[in-house]
Image (tube, rainbow, N blue to C red; front, top):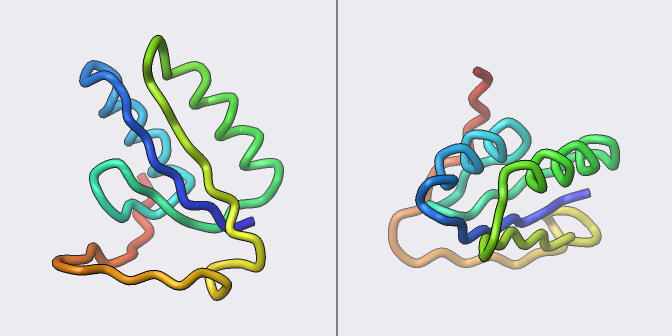
Length: 87
């Protein structure tokens, strides 16, 4: 499954959420990730995010059916290169 993930979280939780999502997805912009993960990993991501977010925080997952090639994407300005960082 290929996902685009966007989030808006309180400043006190942004770094923790960012670090967690980076374990599963490619970081594209400040609050945007994308990547392909399996159903089991997706379940783990959902559980992990629920443990981090509170109150008015929001994390949105877009399931791109058909994979990355089913999505047309344009970027204006500087684009981050996709790199997988294993910590």
